[in-house]
Length: 142
Image (cartoon, rainbow, N blue to C red; front, side, top):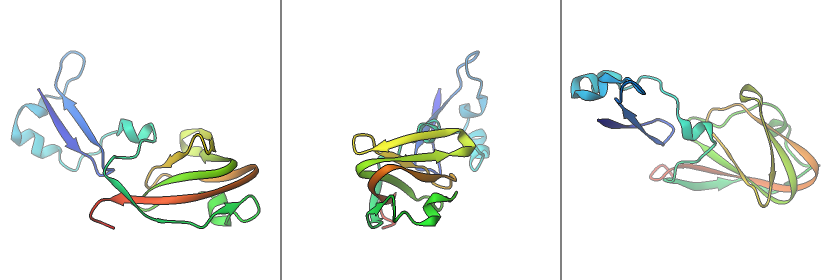
């Protein structure tokens, strides 16, 4: 038996009771499932920096270069709850750094990257670069 949880991040997660591999007996009854609403759970898709499919773009930054990156983007910062973003590189490369998760990725035009809501991160130029950031939120909130 499984239950699909709708997470605050916008992803869904199957919650199964499949002993001995997974023990979640609370999925077996409506009453026990109701008790789990609001409980914290790990989102595997957020951990892989995957944006939920229902997100829609609602604004973007101007194009920045290695010389015009705002100080705020160079320092640790985070998007608000429910706000996803995508780093779009037009030319060159930029480093995307999430210290708390020990993540450092190189973002290029061939490999854009996703910013997960509320996760502190920063960017750093890797030589010459032209990029912008596009922001997303759930459809209906635009």
